[in-house]
Image (cartoon, rainbow, N blue to C red):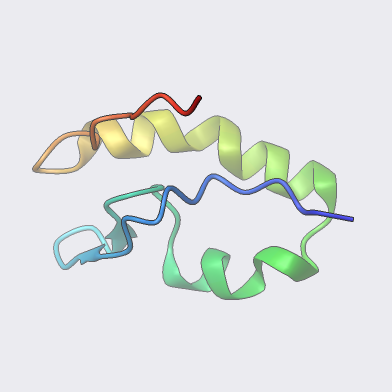
Length: 66
């Protein structure tokens, strides 16, 4: 069974915000991801677009997958 994840394989942490510039999660959230309940993961995922918008570099470009 696979776990839904916001990871886009752009893994770098912004030092000012301590957020991954690819997905917007904190290092703690990334480390704990597989242990979180589906509800906790969905709650965090709902916050990610706002977090990414606040990054100094802005959100990463999204690439469509075929």
